[in-house]
Length: 155
Image (cartoon, rainbow, N blue to C red):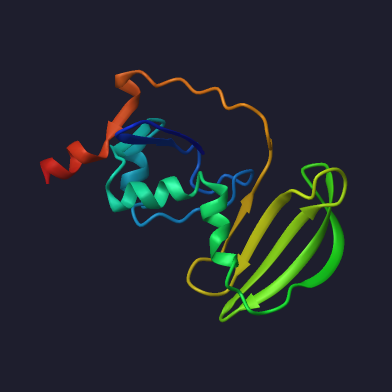
């Protein structure tokens, strides 16, 4: 998934809704006909809409991780593993119906490399990489963009 933000819009491109490198993201619109309509185009929406804010939150690591701040259960140290070639230690914690397994780098900076959520309403996996590397983004051509706000006006 690739995302860029501008002053008044959010543009997102997902190469595959269940891309194993980026984790599994379930969208309310992720049905065959919608996926066929989107194809390989970028999605554009007014950045002030609630749906766009929810999608933008996936691009803000601090906001994404904020849900873990008030967890009262202790994390349990697990086994060592490898995530995308990096050695990591796993930490597991429960929060209600959710069980989270976090993989944290053990060499260099202790970066979060992977979060897996099981149980609850939103199970899935998110992988994190390329910390402190610049993001080179370029706005797509108009023909490659599907404007979600215009679709809403048609309905």
